[in-house]
Image (cartoon, rainbow, N blue to C red; front, side, top):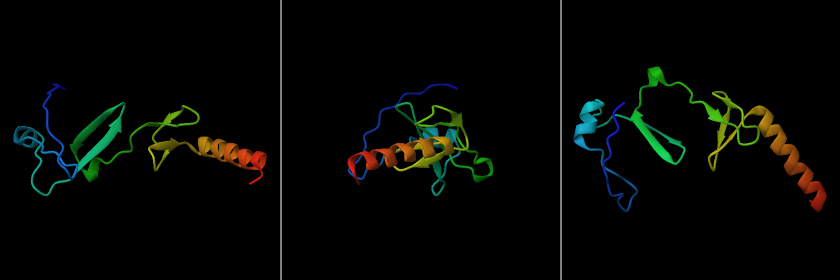
Length: 100
């Protein structure tokens, strides 16, 4: 994939304009949806296609295990089932220690 670097200003509402050349290249038209993924200090944006809407692999915050089955929570927290149980146990242990 060819890397193209363009600078755009974010307006007061948090919007940016996708240059026409990129919209044309990606076949993005007026009412199309785009998908954005935050990954390693970058935002990856692509045309959204529900037919190919596959889950992204994510790393569990607690276990470090990478999988497509992890849950994404607010604050960009990604947890596996095991990680969620581990975190819940730690939270409950803390509450018991401080008497809550």
